[in-house]
Image (cartoon, rainbow, N blue to C red; front, side, top):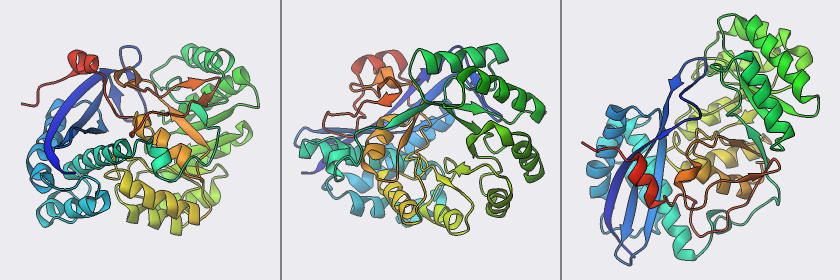
Length: 372
């Protein structure tokens, strides 16, 4: 079986409402940038990365796939996923310009498409191809109700609706305001609304410094927070070490770590309690597996960062034994033939062959952007 053609694409899909904001970003659309890999035998594998729908940046990723990566893949056997990942990741010109940038994101999209092809060829969903589900139940937590751009009333109503009407047993609330008192007041209101048995995670998106984080964790001591996600600048290992030791709230991070080696350093130093790999940042499933196995060896829980990459992460989450929960953000689910589905707070296990990335033709009709 050989690769005959690679077809890049860009989709921009609206987020919930007109826009959302966390402590560092405001978005109106989510970018789905990737490719469809065609084989001479007629199979088509789909892979993509997640972006903030910046058309200039998205075109750079698509162009990298169309030029630099395509020439490395045509006529290759698509089943050799690990070898092809190494061929691209260690290709000297690409390694020089993109070890954690555009070329890295492009590789992630290609790697996901290759795994999608491998699972399709085997006639299996990806979780089954990797070795089978390790759990019958995967609990979802809802991130889409917790944005900083929501008013206090909208936040509380959304949290209550997610728990009482939709069955979620976990939610995530964005923090990172200039005044931490505002964040604490919002968390107190949410805790009162959902009760003590619902888990509440928080996420600062790297906004605060260490003293501010320590003030926040002291003020939140009685709220029983599940974790404090991306509290500090993403690469600050020492700061995370100190916060993990002193803060009193478990630290979660990983969405801005681009290599397995970066994760290894944080894990080795005791700088995180929850490990959050993302196939988009890690250049695909191949590297995600390395990170998940390292976390499991350190006896740390793995909770994939969705970044709305849930279509892939749901397979990896059902498969990997260190994973027991799943981040739910529904922005792009309508684009897929087998969308991620949550029923009564639990994720429905996908059953179609592949990695869950097959995109409906209508999504291209509605959301596709020009590559030029």
